[in-house]
Amino acid sequence: VREGTNRLKELKMKILQAKRAAGSTTNNIFNAPVGNAFINSSVVQTTNNITITAQILDDIVRLSEGHSELQSAALEVHNAHIQGGNVVDRLQKWALLANTVAGLTEKIHQHFPQIAVLIENLKHVRVG
Image (cartoon, rainbow, N blue to C red; front, side, top):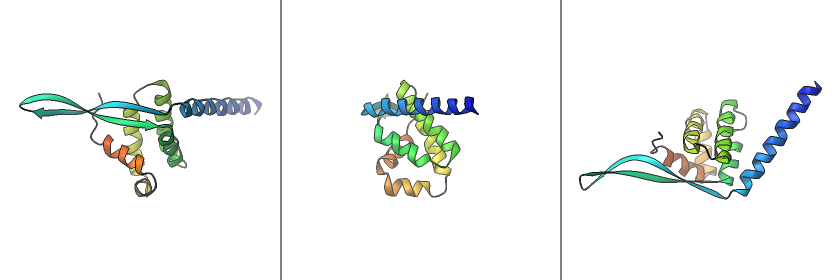
């Protein structure tokens, strides 16, 4: 029991440190490929700017509460953001899962318009 309690305290401290680190980051803009566009018969790789703020990360975590798989995906987004990993891929995974939770899509559109716009932009992004 003592060992489990200590592990839980360590995890809580790590999460708190991660939140502080994310709070110090204001915005990250990712240029995500959305595919090839044909302009004057030539192929041009197009990109879409995806802006992620600390507030958006916090909202994603808050929206994920009560859904273990969604919470796990939100944690992946948060960790990728902090570590500079592939955030767009993680966001797409979270958005797909969020779409499967009854009533969550409507809640996002009504109360979290920035996340709704982000999800809409992610629909057009090709990763890899």
